Image (cartoon, rainbow, N blue to C red; front, top):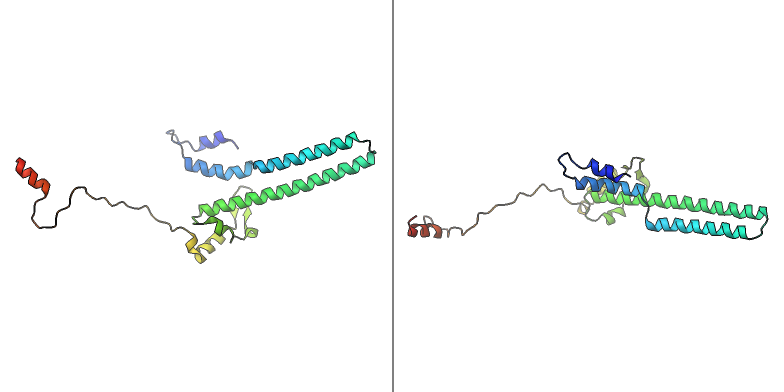
Length: 185
């Protein structure tokens, strides 16, 4: 991910910056490019454990066959952990992408609606787009409209002139008009 390129992409010719489009693109890119500190720490611990196992095997005077068996076991364990890690990472990215898409669809409570989503029908494509969610959201809008904000147009403000309104008497002069008469204006 090249942040400078993304910033340049959302900087207009007049020098203004489109922060909303930038934030949207960054939010879409981050789950693809980064992993959480927890995931990184977990992988680091696995590497340290494997390194420790290898060092302990090298220090002991085990036969080549026994070392080979231990090495194969360690490699197989590492592959299993990597497979599990990748599956967990993909699941987390899918979950975060769906939650973000639900939030962007105008839900009042995206966490409540997320519980209703059939994740088996949702697929994250290689380009990062989500397929299989729009149909579900449409169904939810029909069956549970109370979970979505109504699309409202821009509110037109009511402009009220300042000052004291007339007292309601027909033909009566306002206080300002009476003062102007006395001053001779």
